[in-house]
Image 1: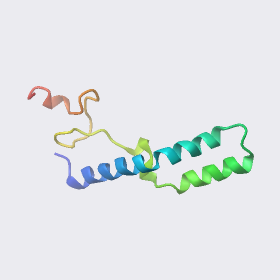
Image 2: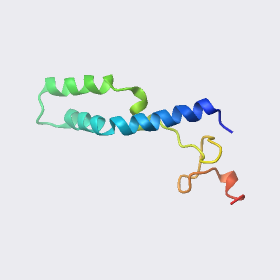
Image 3: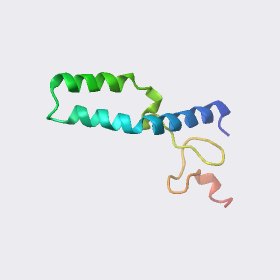
Image 4: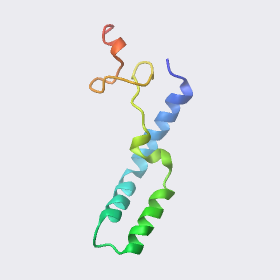
Length: 86
């Protein structure tokens, strides 16, 4: 069983990622866009860095739906050890 603080931290990360997802995508597109000037791309990079770190999807960890432990079968959302119980 995972600690409750770790589960709460993951919930917070998922919430922040949902809030800032569109803004993060727009800033990344602006950085890649060849039509933007150097200053616009630089400002987009600075604005992206000002977003919370936990709003990035790469900081999320897949956790078991039953116990909250890390590592799971991504297709079902729970650990391999729980497949025998179901």
